[in-house]
Image (cartoon, rainbow over all chains, first blue to last red; front, top):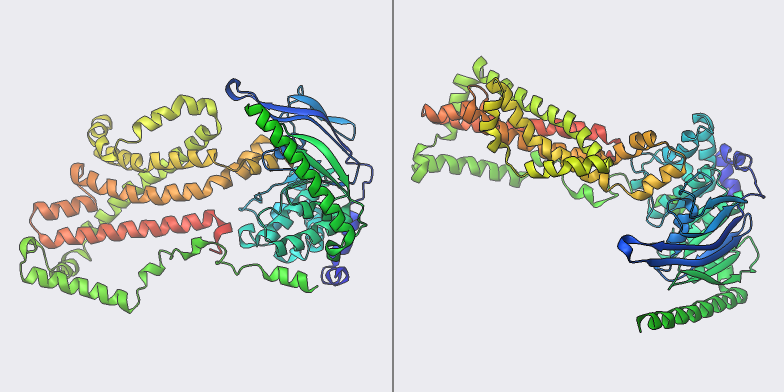
Length: 296
Length: 279
């Protein structure tokens, strides 16, 4: 498959060079992070004592029920929102703390649940926007890099001049992943990117995402509530619970890479999935009891 | 490989991507099929018959043939008639363009600056419900010439619509778009130019479409009330001088003028939104 793509698209072969390997970046530490929303005095604890340690280049999935604070945590890491306690560090540099103003940056780009391509820009213009704005690449360099990455991501270079609304949602989401990678981020934040997709498209997306991951080996934080997806993609699955949102348990996924679709039916996969789902249910039950107690 | 091919094939053909395309384009509506032709012919026949039979109020209405004859003989080559077109078009153009030039920046300003919004938006909300024609007497008192007062009323007709459209659209820009632009290192100025402006262009287009329609409404009424030129005046004079065909020539001219303006606005809108060309 790759050979075919590379032949059609000579620039694709240079992608590996353009997307330099940076095995030592992307170590994320989330320590005791808490977030209290306080609109008009009614303090709502969204996240409390949340700890996450992610090694450079790891693929970590965070699962949890809706409303457990996954997106709050993601927004704090991305620098879109403040935290009220604790600290977030990326490669030893503080990213967020109660004293720091939120500061987004090209080192951690988010792919959103509902998609956020700029509809008024073509695929190519969307993808080259980051490096061009930052002045990191010239228009030509950006185009070559973009065409390479788009090509690797399932032949998207063929739709480079198309406007996003004309693409299927799967293609749109892949373009977004490429747009994020174009910034050469230390960490890629994926906020339930495949949530609204049917199983077949999801499987295609997983294959493309894993392919991109193999290619650039960046730290990925992947938020989802699909347990199977989490096990199939990640090196480690962290389980977030609600009331308040916090990280209780994690599960190491020992499946070898590269991951292939036939692993979905393997004994090992089934075992891990059962284990994960048992833990999730246990935590959900505890959270429910905590909720009941709160109400009482 | 086959999966890749299949995936690329899922690109919908341009123009079928969204339900928007189901709406027929303005031009398509003007090319009628046999049913359309039949209904238009029937309309004229019925009109003619009702006038011939002098049914009720139709006794005072001219027949289609009388209108056509009067038009060809007295108006088609008359400089005065075409000056009426020019007078009305000029007023619509000045009023409409001034409304866009002032209204779009004001909408952007109020939409992006909470402080200014708090200070000035209530005034807009206060003035907005006043129909443009209610401004006529005040406008005549205020402006030194009738011409300026009519242009002003026309301006009012389009101004509030565009301000409110732009204002609302700025405030409903997807926060993900702004966040992403920030993530990728865009400065506030760049975010304004490259994210906020393109985001509001569709709303500017809507504001312009609505605005041009209101502008024609307003200019015709204002001309009937206060002016001695223009298509509105022509129609009114037809009534005053009891020349039936002129009333209808005026009406048809106004309809045509409004339609032509909408076509122009449509073309401008398409130029503003190249990313919608497939639709």
